[in-house]
Every structure is written in C-alpha cells, then in structure tokens.
Image (cartoon, rainbow, N blue to C red; front, side, top):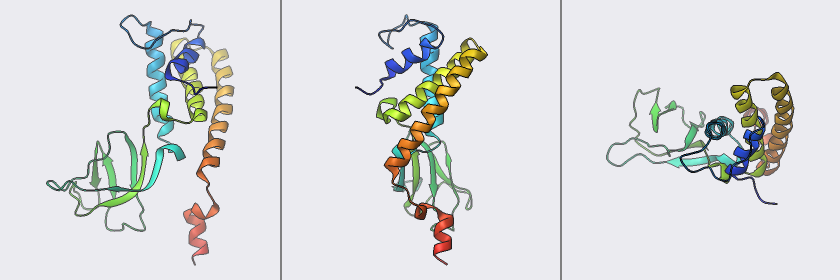
Length: 192
C-alpha cells in the first residue's frame, strides 16, 4: 500500500461534498472546488505542522550569522525557532520574517552562531502517512464547512478527524522515543 499523494488527498477532500475525483492538480481548467481543496490542504498542513511534530522538528539546529551583515537568515520553510533559555540568557530571539531578531538587545545582528529548536514546514509528500491522513481529514472538514457548511457533514468528519489525530499523535510518540527525562520540569526536580 502506497503513501497518500497530494492528488489523492485533494480527491478525498472534494469527495466530502460529493465531487467527482480529478486526475491531475495541474492545468488551467481545474474546477474551483479542486483549487479550494488544494488551498485548504496547504493551509491545514501548515497549521498542523506549526504544532511541532517529531518529523518536522530538529533540536540543536545551528544557525550561523552572515559574515558580511551579521544577520541570521532562517531557512525559508521555518515555522518556528527558539533557543534554550537556560543556555542563552543574554538574548531573546524571535522570528521576524526570515530573519532571527534579538528582542532583548533590539537588533538583527548576531555576534556568534546559535543552536536551537527549529520546526520546518515540510512538503505534504515528506510527511509520515499518519500525519498525511490527519491533515487530509482535517482539511476535508474545513473545506466542507467553508464550501457548503452543513452540520451533518461537519459532525461526521469531526469524528473521523479526532480518530486521525489520535493515530498521528500515537505514531509521533512512538517514533520520538520520548521519556520523562525530556521534560524540563522533571529534569529540574531530578537535578536538585
């Protein structure tokens, strides 16, 4: 069984409102429902990935300032970046567009490289199947609610969405290999 493609996801989304499947997502004569389904899929994918899952979050990710300007450019698909506040007490970084800004020192200029936790916006095809399914089902509910807005369809798809999210969380937890020691509050108590 193959992973869900973006075309299959869009066809699942438009099936929620009873539309016939399409064979391609390219071309100038796509129905408006297909374009809106693609938009809902992209929007929902970004929103879900913003939560930070094991598959799209990297820890100890190093960012190096530009040699000429001293500014740190974030990768174009960055959804979130944060430094460990215990390691970096002299700065308060925030993402401003595609640059890293220091709120504490009121500057975009950095004197040294920094390591932090970064969350990426991955392409739909780069996501694990459980997350693809959750995003597809959630997109279908959002799309149907915007397109025709009936309570019956929303209720049905909401149940399916809750189940899909539970499977995605379960899969994410399995692959993350988390322990209680990964939590700062637990570590603080143990380290007393």
